[in-house]
Length: 178
Image (cartoon, rainbow, N blue to C red; front, top):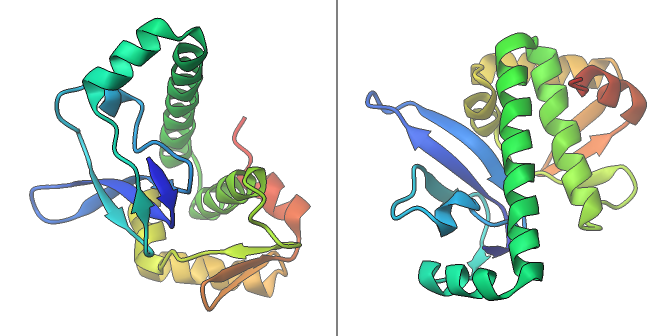
């Protein structure tokens, strides 16, 4: 579990390219499936300084068998992880670059808001162009163009590790996946 900082899950392809599977925020499990699989299907890398807590798989399985509350919590975490994967597959397969980036920004904003990290319409944003590109199947140049276009349209500005959302309704509309 990530206790502090930002990290990301990724898979590295044979040619060295990577696909970022998701960004981890404080309180996130690396993956619910990791609790039940003998080996992880991905790697985790830190974006910022992080603190993690490690759980032994047999201990979690034994505790969840004895605790309805823990079992329900793990089930809900698995459902959320699964639903997020389906949304991301849909975004990657059917959305434009603008919609993909807006989706990522609004998705992270919602998650940060749930953790009371947002101050007004600004929140910490340690992602670089390469991270966004590797998460959304784009090039860093394309990500830069879209973020410049968002800035010019008055939707948002990314600067010095902070994302300032200027027009939340429009950014949310653009990034909403049915």
